[in-house]
Length: 78
Image (cartoon, rainbow, N blue to C red; front, side, top):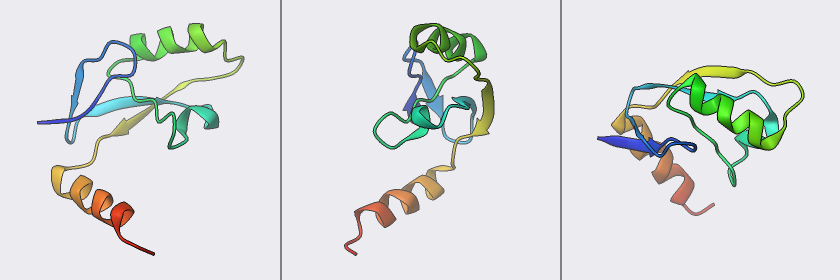
C-alpha cells in the first residue's frame, strides 16, 4: 500500500517505509509537505529551491492504522 508519493520522482512511499524530509522548516509546512524516497531525490529538490544550509532528515512513514487515526483527527470538528 502507498502512503504518499515522492515529491521529486513520484515513486510510491509505502506505509512504514523509510523516507527523507528537508531540514528547512518551510518545506515541512502542511501546504508543501515535501517527502522524498531517496537522498538523491531530496538533493534534486535542494538544487531547485537553492537552500543555503539544508540536510536530509531520515524519517519513517506511519503505519496504515496510524495514518487513518491522523486523518480522522484532522477531519474531526473542533
